[in-house]
Each structure stands twice: as C-alpha cells, then as structure tokens.
Image (cartoon, rainbow, N blue to C red; front, top):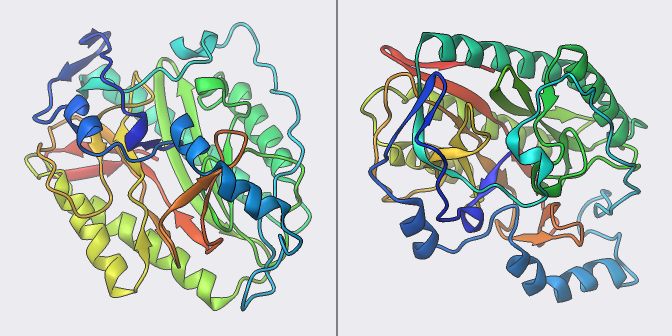
Length: 350
C-alpha cells in the first residue's frame, strides 16, 4: 500500500520499538509536507478539489466511452462488508482507529531478530501475491480476490494490513486499468484485456511485509504490456542501485530516466516508505527526480513502488476517498517490493 506526499503529517512515533530502532533522517517529513503539499491516498482536500471533475466523469452520457480504444472507463462496483479476523490474530495498533495513523519520523533499522521477522512477513506477502495472481482471469470479481487473499493471510496467522487502515474496508488493494492505486475490491468482474495491480501487505508477528505486482487479464494489447514491462524494469533498476550510503534521490532519478526513455509519465503524488514494525515510516521514497536529502542505512527496510502512466500523471479520487484514477483515464501500472539494505546492496524481502 502506498502513501502520498499530502498524507505525510508532522506526527511522530516512538523512537524505540522492540527489536527495531529509529534513526533520525537527514530530511524532515514536516519540511517535505510544507514544501510539496502534493496528494496522498489522496487527501480529503484533494477529493473535494476534484469533486466537480468526478461528477463530470460519472454523470455524462458518454461516461463509458474512451477514444481510440475498445476499453471502457473504469466504474465503481458494489463493495461487500469487511471480512472478519479471528480474535487470536495480532492486530496493528491503527486498527481500532479510523484515522490515518500518519508516518513515523525515523528510519527502521533492525537487529538480527527483526531482520528474520521482516523476512518472514515479506515471504508470506510474496506467497499471497503469487496466489492472488493465479485468480486473475476474465469474469473474476476483485472482491473474490479479496476474499481469497483475506483467507490465506489469516490461515497463516497474520493480519491483512490494509484492513482498517484509515478506514480502508478491504484486505487487499486491486487497481484496474486507469486506477493508479488504492482500488477497493468490489463486484466488477475483470474483463478480457484488463491489467490489474494487486497490492498485498501482511502483518505477521508484529512486522509488515508489503508488495504489489501487475497481472494480465486474458488477451492484453501491446501498449499495456509495454507499460507493465517498463514499470517492472524501473523497479528492478532502482533496487539494483541501493546500498548503504547511497542517496535516496538516486532512486527517483533512476526511475524517471528510464520512464522518460520510453515516454511514460511518473506519478509524483504517491511515494514509497519505510516499513517494518510500522506500516508507513521514514524514509519517504520519491519515484521522480528530486533533490531530497538522506542516505540509505545498513539493515534498513523500505518499499520502492513506482507508478507509471501512458498519459496524464494527475489523479482523480472517487467518492470512496481511496480509489485514485488518472484524470484522462489512461492506463497506469505499478510494482512494489520491500527491500532490506545489506552490506553488499539490497535484499528483496518480497
């Protein structure tokens, strides 16, 4: 699950939690928040700002028509009630509150036990994502994917991290076609030619593992395939440059340079993040060119999750206050891994 720049709040979490210690970063979330209000998942101000455009998109007679393609504009389906989690399963602290918990103000740097727990949560997240991908086919409802993901996570003694995060009603995010991120699983069946991002995060033994990938639904055209391929290459190349002492802003430059080469847009509103005992913490990982300061630290964990588009990089939020789609309904793609900074570079945990 991604965060957005506008959601970064000047709130601070405890500087010492269990086997994980926080190191103050060289940049300040408060400064970043003030410098670029941006847009997160996305803010309510952003939602109100585009409410007129949302009405235009969903109330016009030609709402389903898109130029130069047989694909129809994505529309919301019915959302089923949140699924229950057995009482014995450990829950993240934010579950009891519908308010977004904000982002921690320090890096998560783990000791030996913490690293092993991060590996376990990352491994489970990857297994769940792989299983979810096998369910992707024409006619499958994204709500059915949510049901399967939810069941597999709780069967493994873990909690589905998105469920209850800031009021999010489901256990996984499913973002179809022009949905940039945070799509809520619903009754809409996947259609031949769709592309879908499935974003899985699990909370296992007090640690979050976060990952996402794109999947093809039936016969997908070359334009969509190329977008997905380049987005995956952006993630892989960004991970390859990570190591202790590397500046975080090299991630954004690496991604943006490759996207420019293929003439794709890089979404700037949403960012990667530190992850571990906290779902979202420092560092803030910008996927576009930037001058942010700070260096990677040994045994640190964070996500990289670039989002590329064929057209506009601007987003419109639906009335559910979560789903964000490209304003021109152009296709969007995203991949994500949780990584651990090691002596030799970076270990992919998911």
